[in-house]
Image 1 (cartoon, one colour):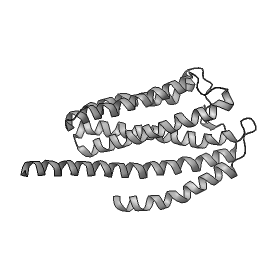
Image 2 (cartoon, helix red, strand yellow):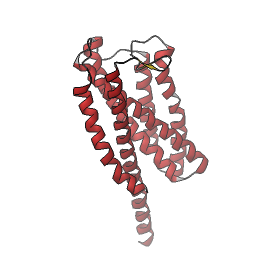
Image 3 (cartoon, one colour):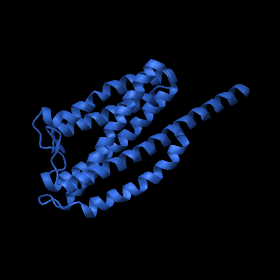
Image 4 (cartoon, one colour):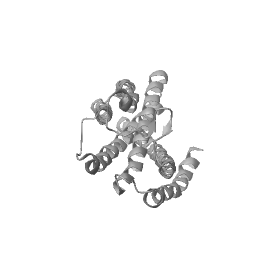
Length: 227
């Protein structure tokens, strides 16, 4: 079943990505104030959402590892964290490109930006701890604790623009209403699933890679014993 999903998903996602690109660059109207630079918004928001989803997967994997002590949950956690960091770096790159012509600066110490930057650093610390500890069980246990603690910053980052005064725009306004033109909303609703499925494809492949590393490590141990 897992192999079928891995085979089918790229064929599902490719037309969705093509449709998303069409809607972003052709269908969606040009913003009257920001102009074409606003089109970065669709990628910026989509990758930010999937970054949060990645860290949620890490959170679930970390909790389940501490409960079950099964390697598969640790594989899920590390795979999701690695992809989440990559997606966050995309967000931190597209954000300043968008902000420069609109805010007149590449970076400002806005609460949403600062909490997001701290979130990225926390998961970078998660990966650093994993690379610093050689013993497998100890590494997974320490990383799981850090992963759980780091996730607490995800809701804080999301709610930052509601908790503090901020210039960062909100896509969803209080009451659940979208503060967008209907065509922009439709475009975002295509872009987000396209990037989400792309994340799932990457996650499954990354988990396979981690499983292959485990098998290689076992083969090395076996060879060392026979030698």
